[in-house]
Length: 294
Image (cartoon, one colour):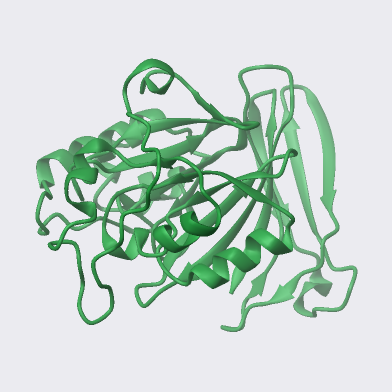
């Protein structure tokens, strides 16, 4: 199952964001929609997303929605995102693209055919593969996808050291991932300095070093679109485990502190597993990060 969401970066600071689901939204007939009301400074404007609501297999409503974040310039940043739950460990693989339809594939953990189906359905090509870390459940479909659609693979060097070796397997669910014959750009140098925004095709994001779950864990923050892919660093109500080889509780705590101090409260958190959240919700309710609430 996948869920597609549109994101727009709004150039003014948002003082209020409220989503209203009309009373008729308990049905799935055409025409149901979400209304999002935004107050930006002294100006008020209503935006309506008239995409149909759909029934989630578990019974709750799944829908397209608008999310707004802060933008550095006076422009709209456009992004589409389709999430796919893949593999035995139900990793959230994300297919992300902008107006040019050159997609970023984040954490292709399993089910290469399902990911390929999303790429084909939306008429996309692949600009890059972004990996939040190297564990087998997040990279197992990488080789098969790369063979069909070659593109650079972004994985921190500290995780490249072991990601395709014999220690990175989770029997009986995941065998050792095959290493693709790919270009692996070097993080932290030139255009890939961590202090700078990175641009791939028409998508701009920042890469935050967040070791702890693994030595080379990172989060991908699309600031203008108000969404951050946190991998296994931060979950809704929890955080990544640190008892696996290369894990460090001290490093993970420092990484959670970095996220708390960096991400605005309205930032949507798309974790490596489980439900989405917001930074504000996690700072208020998540035991592992609320101590850093600013």
